[in-house]
Length: 219
Image (tube, rainbow, N blue to C red; front, side, top):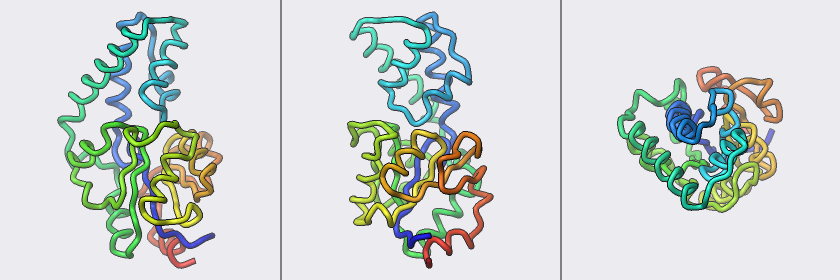
């Protein structure tokens, strides 16, 4: 193991479960297009940008639409999604996450966000976690989607860390691949069968013992 200085967190499915809100908003858009959209379909959108997500939905339905209609659907989807996250509060933080953030801060670690979401800052504000983050890199800052490592490399740069000094927490295979491509330690949050390319996999943060963090810090 290597000494870790910076902890980079994905947002959706790692810190909060906004995936359910994305699903509802995308399902509404797909219904308008006459495309069947299931929870299984939604798995294909994990860790993917908004533009690419709509492209995937259109591919599922074998449909083509005009650029104007494409932009209209993107905007409408975002408005629907924002109406859901407007009601978010601290109760939406996933189990064990707050304890992990507190431990990192108490032990002088750096914390960064590395998310494809363009709504990352308002979500962190809604759930009361902004103060924990030394850097926030989201969909407004990057031009390349995961598995490209851009989002995580920017997080390292903004916290003045080398890639090998960073660990990434991700719930999507594209995110794990991005962390690996960046040369960072990758920790999957979710199912081992899905996230098998990660260096470590935990079902959720309640499974991560303090000793594990200590090992990362002090190795």
